[in-house]
Amino acid sequence: MPKKKTIPVAICYDFDGTLIRGNMQENSFIPELGVEKDDFWDEVKKEKEKHDMDEVLAYMKLMVRKAGEKNQPFNKQSLTKHGEFVSLFPGVKDWFAAINEFGEKIGLDLEHYVISSGIDDMIKGSPIGGEFKCIFASGFVYDANGVPSFAARSINYTTKTQYLFRINKGILNSWDSNVNKVMPENKRPRPFSRMIYLGDGETDVPTMKMLNYQGGYSIAVYPPPKGKYRTKEEAEKKQLAENLQKDNRAQFVAEADYSKEKNLFKLVSALLERIANEENFGMNRKA
Image 1 (spheres, one colour):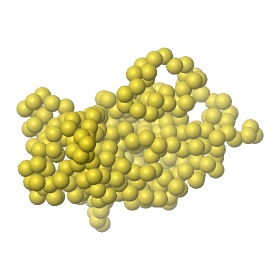
Image 2: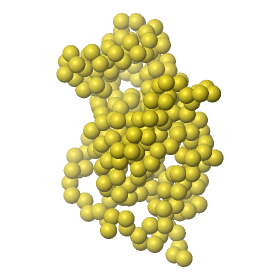
Image 3: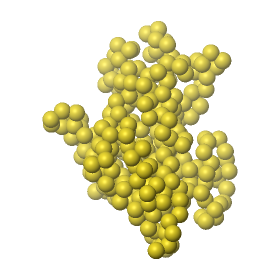
Image 4: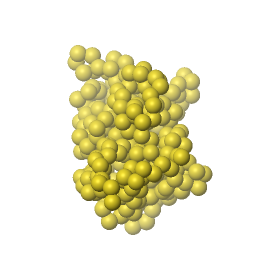
């Protein structure tokens, strides 16, 4: 048997609804405003339609405005603090060490990335913020006092795809236009065939489809029930994930329980074994 190499593999994640339950703003930011989460997101919808506005920019604008109206602190420090209160799905906290250990055993060096429409500083402040090689997410430009002065990035369902190319070409920032230059496939540090993407909804469709086409793997996840039975919202999210697979958007579907004994861990492990075998035996699924 050929000697196993240490092969870098990128596992990419959406964040809200994929690694955590619901949207990150719903755990502490929105409750501190004293408004209902549905009312907040309804106002985002009205804002984007009124101004013909990107939805991510609309919610970022509304966060700034609402915090000001309620005299709530809104700066880099407060956003990072809000990140501490995200509700992780079961097994997420131990997932990275466990799946990294598995990858190492089969000759893979796993790299973890976030590609999210959420706020980067909230992700960085979360209990898992230090697990990622790079976090690509929406964010603000801050003044000398850490107060937002402008939007730095707005990552929506279509712009998510550019970050797969940045990871693919080893350009781990949002500004370098060299991502558009021709780079031979064999010179790219992270081939698409060594990427796995996990997402939970329609905003992940372009990313999933592009990665499928390029020879990578896509997984649609849905929330495990918080109680004994699924709520209506949880059932709808499960149906959405299953539809993504049915409609050939996602290749696989699994419950977002990241515990070692659960199906998601087994599925990702199987995909990693397949990647390792393809690399070690010179197989090429796109040939």
